[in-house]
Amino acid sequence: MGGCQPAIKEEGCNNLAGKQIRWIIPHAVGGGYDTESRVLKPFYEKYLGAEIFLDNVVGAAGVIGAKTIATAKADGLTLGILGATGLMLSALTEQTNIPNPITDFTILGRVSRSWQVWVVGKDSPL
Image (cartoon, rainbow, N blue to C red):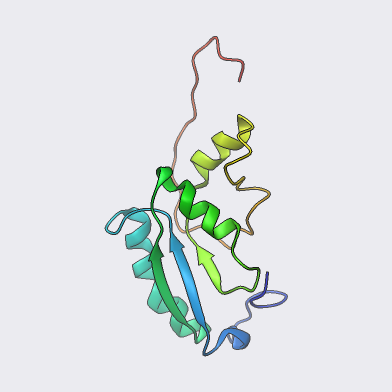
């Protein structure tokens, strides 16, 4: 992926200054991911010197947006926010048509932590 190499430095990402970044939100306007993105946007714009366009790509419980991020051109100009929990479940059940959060993305950071527990019935093979 493009962007800052080897990592974002204290002085910012000069190679993104003046560029336009598409930020994919795989859920509807007004939800948690949308709200978090709107709160973060001005800070990233200031730090990167880039203009960020928020793009809510909805459908299939976030899978369409996740696929949009996973298949974007690897130039550092398409970023996104997503919840990996549902995608991890799909990976564990070997659903290959759904992006795997471990192999199909570069994780840049965590916005928040959610204490969820995955459960299955006692007779499940998982």
